[in-house]
Length: 333
Picture 1 (cartoon, rainbow, N blue to C red):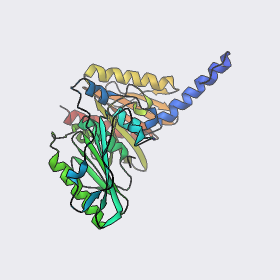
Picture 2: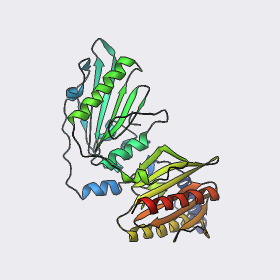
Picture 3: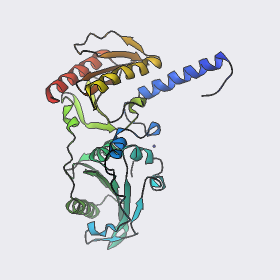
Picture 4: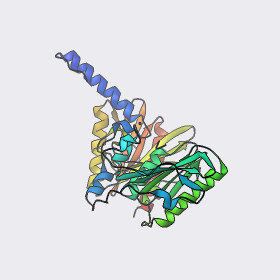
């Protein structure tokens, strides 16, 4: 379901610590996808703190969304930030970092087949960005696109979708047509009975389309690539020949902040053993760093921070960076 140095008293010891830090930093940098074990509350949560706090959803019966052929197997359960891990142990930090407010869940069975059941998980994430973040980070590899809510997909026995600040998972015990139809009815009933503001994430359209794996776009809520100042980072995967490249972008509060983050991330990379290389790209202020046999390329364009992460091929990294810079120049005006 909802899909987880040592002290010494000698200079030798300090040397060991430094080596361990470099290795750890390098491993984090090589991750092109999110690692929930290094999460801390980030920009998405800070964004919520600056707005009126949405009320914690009380325990409520989800029968209002269930079609007639489903009957409750259990009462509804409600969880807040303080006890979310009781329900989804090992995954709670991902949700908390993205602004989690509450979870309501309930299990239903087919009336004539009580052994066949489904469970609905309704996450209130506080904002459309929060709901999209957990949706994108939890997306299954066997997903099939589904026109449901703002963003949606299905697997053999489950539905996953975003509706404004809500992220829903509806998972069944069986992969069976009748149950699949009941789950879809439940989802549509929720959508029709839960009005929300339109959820448009403009950043998704800023990634250049050539060689893009559109299903790969994700939103990292915090600690992007192991760097604590990288929050609200959109990532996308590209194929350049036989090389996979991770591009990223993030709208910052100002051009100055975006420029400062370029310098801060470069310093972070150099601290962990990276080597700055001379960039020949026609991108003012772009920084290119080689680290752990991969390339990091970071730049700013107006108020956007952007770049390429963990590329194994310099030419591929530069090609995607140029495309991304051009797309931002054309679309972010």
